[in-house]
Image (cartoon, rainbow, N blue to C red; front, side, top):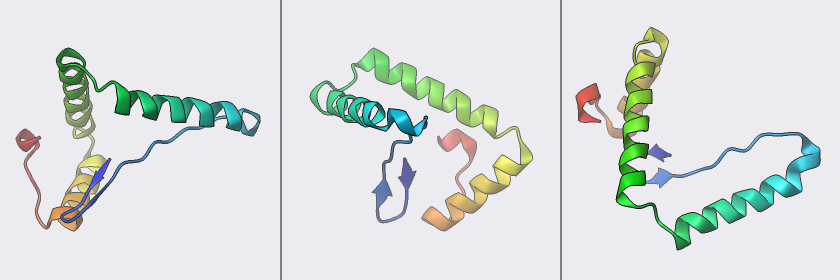
Length: 86
């Protein structure tokens, strides 16, 4: 997910051997369909948010990641938010 001041972009990335392209496409379509037909329940959503928050904070312990984060935020929304904002 990439958020910008006036829009956003949600994308999925799959990787594998080219001979599995058809299978990966089938899996991608099925999984996206699950998101539409069966939204996550509150417990699953809370767990995903906690995992994302943990990953973000762990990544921000690396200086190059911090600089990239600052640049991305300034370009996207014009200012940097403190880590606690997220």
